[in-house]
Image (cartoon, rainbow, N blue to C red; front, side):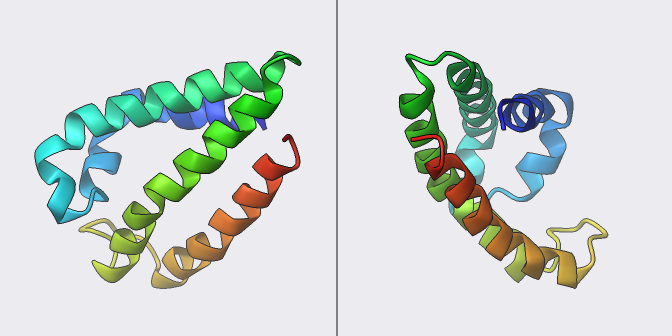
Length: 109
C-alpha cells in the first residue's frame, strides 16, 4: 500500500495536468496548490505506513484524503472524462474502487 500511495503522490508532480483536468470547477482557482497538497499528503502517508509507530495515523490520513478527493472522481465521471479519452466504464469502475481503497487503508488502522 505504501508503494501505491508513494507512486500516486509522485504522479501529482510528474503529470499535474491530469489532476488539473479532473479538479471540479468550483476548485479550479486553487488547482495547483491542491495538486501539491494532495501529492505531498500521499507521499507522507506512504512513508507513515512504513513506520510502525505512525502506521495507524497515516492510514487515517489516507482515509481522510480518499474522502476529500472523491469529488474529483465524480467530476471526472460527470464531465465524461474531463476532456481525456477515458472509457466511461472505467470512470464508473473508479467510484467503487475508491471504497476498496478506503477498506484497504482501514485495515492499517
